[in-house]
Length: 484
Image 1 (cartoon, helix red, strand yellow):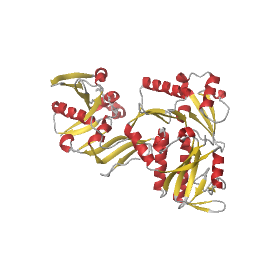
Image 2 (cartoon, rainbow, N blue to C red):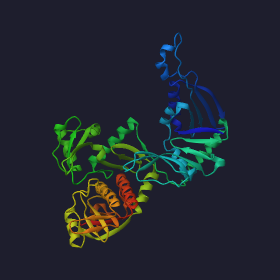
Image 3 (cartoon, helix red, strand yellow):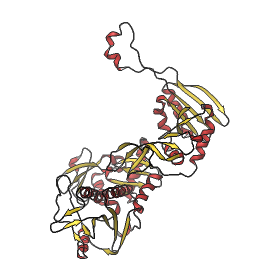
Image 4 (cartoon, rainbow, N blue to C red):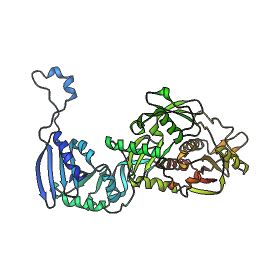
């Protein structure tokens, strides 16, 4: 039984990769034709040795001889035709090969040939309350995902051991255990290509950090264009309770006056400071002033929600990522499992006026009387309560609801520890449901949460929903529409 760690390459990039391998000391040992495919084997004939740590400790005892070095050979085996190219990495050649491969290959194959039960799952988390990197030993359990989770690797049994081996590791590459010789790989590779063109059996979310410098520059240019043109691809993630000042890296003295952060204020700053946004977008900083007088600085890009669904590109914490469709599909499915109640009435005025009108209609005003509940949990603001549901209200666009969701998650944690009760000045609230009340702009009419064009919003909704359910409550969303 042989193990093949296969990477899928773009055929046009094979020559560039071969050049890199030659520069790293690999030589072409043999090339043979197998039907319409070519098999080529490269290996390190005379690899450079690497230092051994203990030779320095015992250097005085190597009298008259040269201290030894570790010599490790490596190789690469290519299987290619006019339409495809694959490489099996042997040893450290994966370091070069992974820079030229299709990063979604392993997950795409797992979506088609992995069983629904996995043994190991390795993931990264984005905008999640959990650790940013985690390995989970699934012990054969059905695979599940959390909000913002991107799958890096799974080890799973295959759906057809006769074709794919008993199990495989699916990541950037796929490691197959096959009872075939290397020269028998072409038919197997053709079967892989056929499977990749078939519909996926299941969706596995994956997000990849973009590292190519030229691509990053292009994306920064697209972001600058979206911000100045008013495109709905880009929106600002702000907290209405905070004030903001904009300044350039290294030029704190040129900070704009404290105030709200919106696209109008941002454009004024660009004009006043003669900023070339395309060239200087990574030098823009924001000073955040919260209601309690604390200050902190953030990169401006980290406060932007950008989603290019056509090209599957997004910003997360100011960094550029490419996501697969399964990642977005998963978040949209999660969002649409939250019950929505449409409010037929319309509202006018700001958020406080909206809340006061609901109080007149019979809701309990929760904004007063709670500064902090105990030393561990701090609650800055609760809004409304009625019929067992505690509401967090947010007027404006749904994309700007992130901070309200953070607040709702924090209160949920408190309620979980406090058995579902909150003491107000004159009554005890017995909470059964945690609600989010969106009073959205007329131009932002939504029928389902999945319609909101914000990856950050969808991740936050999924995170909030899971926190509410894990605490034993029911999530609920209520939507009111702004009057014309």
